[in-house]
Image (cartoon, rainbow, N blue to C red; front, top):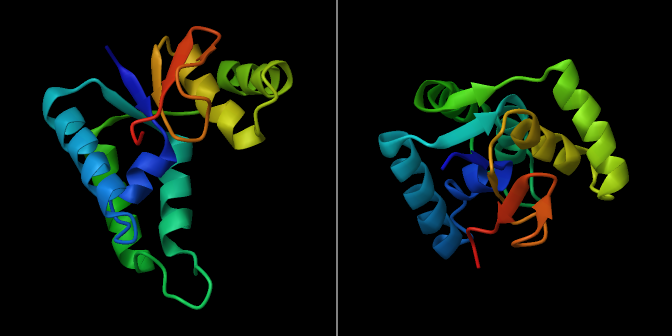
Length: 141
């Protein structure tokens, strides 16, 4: 079964502040890269770079900009990447309205819905809920 990976899974792989989530995301992504079945979206790659390079209060970013970009390039090699289409945009608009999702969450869901991907791995939605034909699974229970 194919799964779409949300940005938080990609970010936790590099977040030393959350060791359990870091280990779990590493396991998910390593298995997905070797066995297949994991897909990422163009949006997740962009959000990954932004989330890992932004300053978090008085601390430093999770990654230096150059490293984040290099890792984003590696994601493009390791996984199939979905790109936005008019169908994805229309579904995101519908999902934002019908499910009261925040815009970026609606857009992430729409990638899965438009491409027939039955599962979305994310901690940003209600675990186990089905949105359209996509079931959300929180990989960090």
